[in-house]
Length: 147
Image (cartoon, rainbow, N blue to C red; front, side):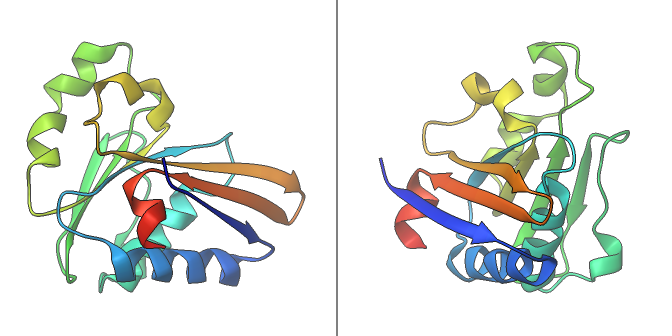
């Protein structure tokens, strides 16, 4: 399995990573974003969606609505936040499997909670706080091979 590592020392670094991911993103990509609260999952989604051509103001965390769609860019972005889901059925009831087959990129915050429900081609993006201003990002899977 391919692996890509990146160290972010600023919001600008995270934005650059998001631009890099957006550049190689393909329809059908599924990314499980994993990390503690405040690690930068939503910021990375904002960077990816913005780099794909969406307004930065339009990209917000779907913590309470569970899924947001951003369709103004080169690829549609389907942004899930599964932190508050009680079980697998809730995730499936959102129509997650249908999103995987749509012509866009699916980004799932707290993706480790539903990783066993994701397609085999899904990539995992782990963001770990290593310092107050530093994050270590590890991408595993198909996306890593393109970065």
